[in-house]
Amino acid sequence: MTVANIADEIYKELGSPTDYSTSAISFWVRTNVGELNNLLIANYSVNAASPQEIEDDNTVPNEIPKEAVAVLKKMYMVHYYDLEIKKNLISISTDSIIEVRDQGSSVRKVNKNQVTLSLGNLRKQEVDGLSDLITAYRSRSSEPRQVAGDDTVEGEYRRNDTTLRNGLY
Image 1 (cartoon, rainbow, N blue to C red):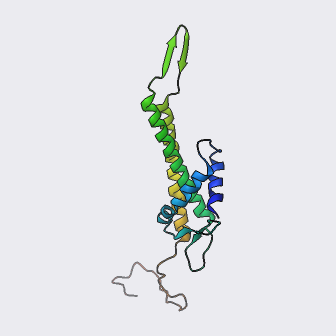
Image 2: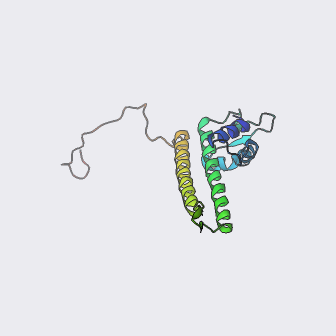
Image 3: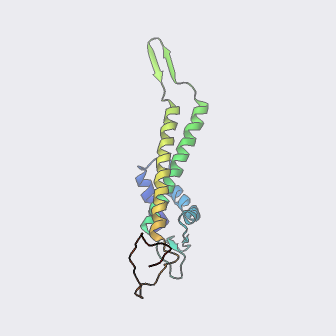
């Protein structure tokens, strides 16, 4: 899957926000493939050729699987909420007026502390989802290090009698 396709999917899943563009998301995706490798214990890289496809660095390059793309998208969602929280914290420091009343009319601004808390809760949900996706990806792609026993030789099976002492049969 190409970087541009992943960025376009992320942009559409966010609801096409006007503050962000697909080129900025594409840049983020390209620069965070290394973090994806660290989280998934994988070996992906961006192909420098014209399509800029994310591939596995095996002897025969494979396209990045959908599961790894889902982790990358969730990583961007965490990044997105980090940016939104920072944006709100900066605006809180410059705008402290919540309500103004004068001659029977009033103006009430949105309580940005509540907005920041809500964004923090959304970010926490995304982080939890990210850790669940990472765990699922790792467990799906893991292989046992050692398989004990020999299934090709018939074994001896004895009755498990608890009345016998000292391991004698």
